Image (tube, rainbow over all chains, first blue to last red; front, side, top):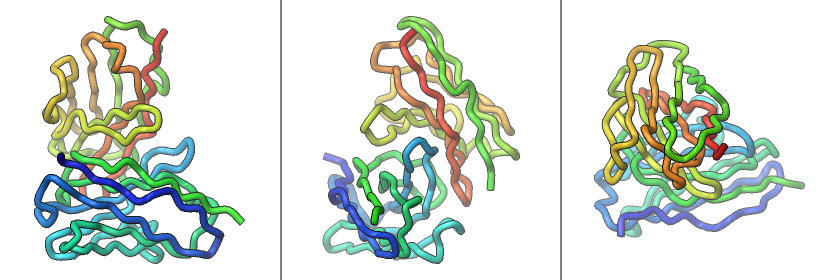
Length: 118
Length: 107
């Protein structure tokens, strides 16, 4: 079954970091990029960037480039998103999604809720 | 950054009716770089349309997309009960952005 399955919800404090995983199955992981998109409560979807699962190249949205790191483990078919310097405004559902480097997103993970609270 | 503005914010319609959703861009978008997604409460978005008018795999033909330049439209010809959801447009150029969404609700 072609799917992306993300790690579970996280509760963390301001200033901390969070790392979310996204496991791909049912397709050749290295043929695609993995994008990260977040959705804060009541807000529109917000693109954070992508990692090319094949060669590891990354592109980050300017808004997040100082705080976010994308990595991948091709042996495990997993992509990771780490966001540092967390603040309350980072409370959101974070999705991974499959795409090319300049394409639509045709497969989405179920989302991971990250709650930042003191 | 290209800002996408969707209208209306909410569309109240009955099953069987036609839905027309608009997406306007702050600057011209390549027709090959415009997509539409459907999102139901508590679920991930689902790709409906890419390249302005191409339906994604498994999407019924009651969904259609059109437009060019700065004005794009998603049309649902006859609403089915499962179509009541929030719809987002996205431009996927070098720095992708999404619209704020249109909620299609049961009247």
